[in-house]
Length: 117
Image 1 (cartoon, rainbow, N blue to C red):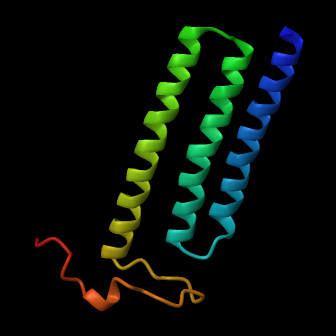
Image 2: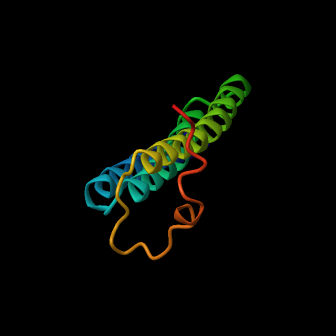
């Protein structure tokens, strides 16, 4: 049973590393800031979850499972908020949209939601 857990844990850790590697490729290849933010926040949520689950399978135990669960929940919450903050600050500072972007729903509102300086 322990050998099977180690194999499963190793597979999950490698999958998590692959997710991060693909996000790195996405940062280099995606056309604009907003797509890059999407790649990084997705990788942060999925990659870290896979790696932590793999580590728990390597070192099974109730305390490790609780720690990993808390770390995953906190990471998912903060990655989403961080991605939103980066996207908003990029938009407010005028980061250009990719040429493939068809709609800019915020442009209809003008920059009225921009905080006063």
